Length: 305
Image 1 (tube, one colour):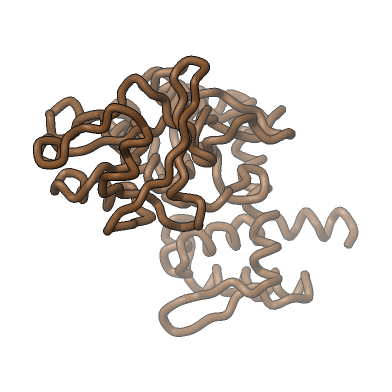
Image 2 (spheres, one colour; image 1 turned 180 degrees about the vertical axis):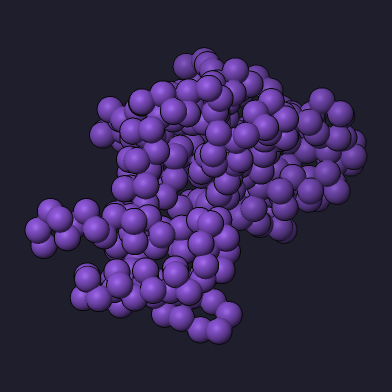
């Protein structure tokens, strides 16, 4: 394809990206200030030029084909590059505007990131936020996101990173459970308690605690296992046992006296989903103002340690 033909495809690729994002020809047309029939002609022209079917159409919805999904990644990157060029030229420097797409693990997104969104939206009236709750690894270069929040010992190579804090785990129980069963005084005591833990692998019931240079391991048991943080938190509040929970999920319950931290002199050493939390984004790329202010907002409201 010669350069002139390639340049002619750029408007159609941009329209294609908007169609995918909105999931509807009519909505895309309205946002682009054109008509559905014009958008439809553009899509047919683009498919003909590329020699591939990009969309499966029905009366109510559209669906990307395998080729369409691949082309969309490039189209979305093209639109993002155009927006970055506009930012660099100063056209969007007056105020942050547009949509910020950010992904985070489900529990972290629910307990830590989501509570910060209302204040951000009030502070930046022209910036929208798309928060994606997912426990799958998301790549800010490959996937259509601006920022990725991920707990990991070290940031992946090839990405810019900013540390937001750290995830620590702790055993917690309700005051009612402690009154009825007593509080463990050493990690080995947990073997005689009902414990609420993940239960996804055979090793999830083997815990290691550290106090100074001393470590102590224990195999726990329980009548209720759940691979959801909120479920274990609720079960602990209902006196069902000692729950193994991340600190960020129990802050409010501890403050309000609904839970107590048992074995507070010991540090729990989980095997996964712990340690530093990083904000990841593509390196060596001009960050639009909307992304920069969101990064600054998270950094200002989350404790870095």
